[in-house]
Length: 390
Ligand code: RFL
Ligand code: PHB
Image (cartoon, rainbow, N blue to C red; front, side, top):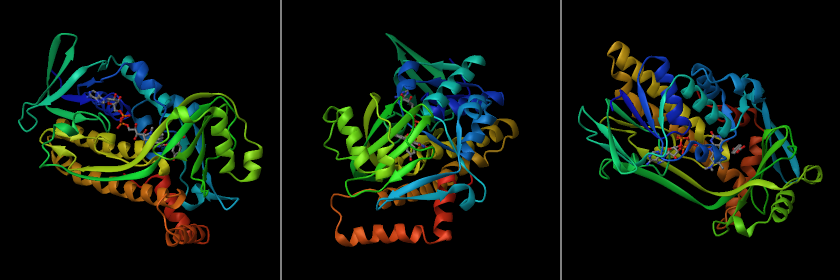
């Protein structure tokens, strides 16, 4: 087979790039390791920044998001038994975020690819990029006993944190920066009315908690748990009891509980691999960088990578201008590191660290007091949360 751009990974990053390039007449093949059902069963992001929503519209995939997603102009931080609101709209100068699940967004991208007869190959086994530093790179994958080769101009590594593309870059070329947090998030999805119309990020001495939602009948809640915990350690009753303990009384009192329809633990990690280009391989999204979910930045950082790559590829194919491709890594990384800083800051502000000393706790407390006493501090939080410009 032959294509212009071979995209490894059929998650939001890969599908979005494929759709955008197709609309500009650039041919792509997407290779996805898992089945479509599997990809759509992963419960992940819930908050999209303005720029991501715009990209969905540009990809002609924004219709359902605009109809069913909720625009949120603020969220709450609970601490010391009180709820303080962060007015995103006011402090970001009129911006907001969209609450729309990654599952739904991925479904919309798959539907759009289907409508345009886009090539998305599922259950592609042993995907391997080859000859990345030559001008004739290719990718192979296995379908049963058959090994299939795809010749292309460029390979995109959009295959997430555990993918093959980053691993195919020689170790002496890549610098990896990593910070592993000593806790994870236990997440529960339930068909219950969300406890609050806006998200609540809760700082509590027993550990962080988050009240989020997918719709007015579907809630998504998280609690900080030790890394040694497993899902089996947490019955639904235990989960609800612990969540309530970490929230202000009036919020806990109005919490509607019910059976979990999904329950999983995600470890918290920050990671960046530099550079994001190796020869004719370009990495995007979780393949190159991940953040703890506290600042809702993961998918949104992927969006800026895709935006830069999309414009760089269009400039290359339509105008013969390679400056976007040359500058891609540096440009993408500049924004990636700002999302890293913000996610680290929000994680440090709101979590209980097992090894913290009284001095650290005083700083956390002071950081919160400063935040809610300074319009400039709130402005900084708001502009980062709604997303820095691409
Ligand atoms: P994905 O979604 O991991 O997709 C990569 C795809 O590549 C496939 N793959 C391969 N395909 C072929 N060959 C191989 N060898 C392959 N290896 C892997 C995989 O099967 C998969 O389908 O990466 P992508 O597209 O870059 O998207 C990134 C986002 O998924 C991620 O950043 C967000 O989910 C992070 N995140 C959040 N981000 C936000 O912006 N806002 C949020 O509110 C938010 N909440 C979250 C989150 C992540 C969470 N978890 C579970 C880590 C909440 C949670 C709990
Ligand atoms: C979610 O709804 O899954 C969600 C929302 C906000 C975050 C992280 C996760 O910061």
